[in-house]
Length: 123
Image 1 (cartoon, rainbow, N blue to C red):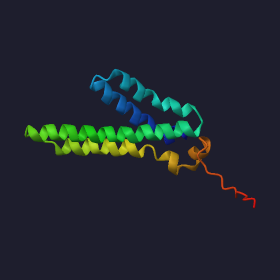
Image 2 (cartoon, helix red, strand yellow):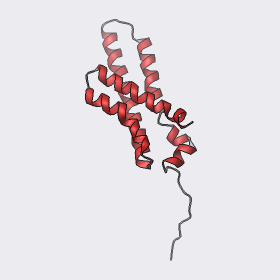
Image 3 (tube, rainbow, N blue to C red):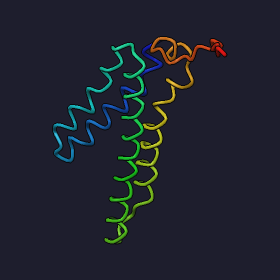
């Protein structure tokens, strides 16, 4: 069951790794493909780091979409289908961070659940 919850994270990372590899950025490719390994660290900082990387990955897909669309528009080539596909990949990548916010099991596992203990104020 846990694999299903993190599948989108792993898939997003692999897509980012392939994207960077296609552009010859080998170091970023390896880092992108490996960042889900942080999920083996059951700490809040690891989960937050993965969330931030996924959000940044979504922004990278948006940047790429704009860049390719601009180039295709300038050359008079079709661009709408490409923009829809890459836009969907951008949304998928960014939304992949949501299980840490929406899934109580993952929140507890990574220590993201807020404990509601009343604080005492001494006067």
